[in-house]
Image (cartoon, rainbow, N blue to C red; front, side, top):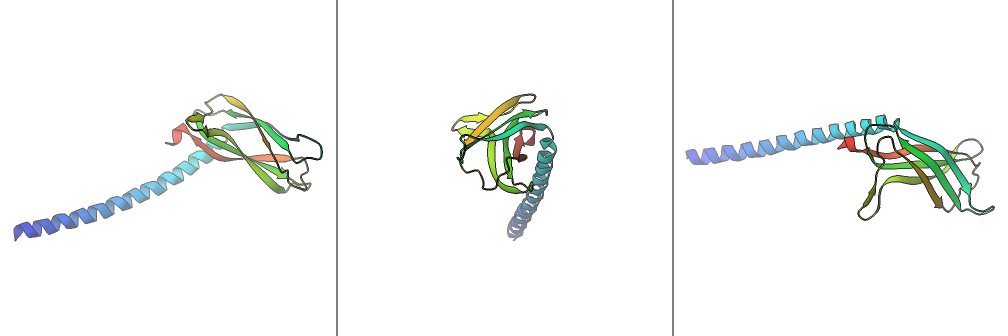
Length: 150
């Protein structure tokens, strides 16, 4: 009889312990996601984007090239970074965009990073400039992940 009661008590403790552990893990995951988002937003100010230009490759054609310089002014190696280049109309409104990957995995086994104090010249060609583009652009850092965010 004692063995049966002890076995039931152990099973109940295991079930409550697992439920408690799952709840604790879930709360930690949410807190970590919030902290990661805050770290990402804070680190964006450490990324410097300069000399953003978009130029048509041929007059009357939709082929174009985006080019800019990007520098990591922070203390962490950036492992993933993409810049969203926004095309503006005559009123300054966004009429289209192009996401440009600066770092990340481009080929299997090849991961490009941006170390502290380093900078890259970025250039990407593409097709389809939006109709009504004024020739002006602006940028926004979209995806950012650095080594301190583990």
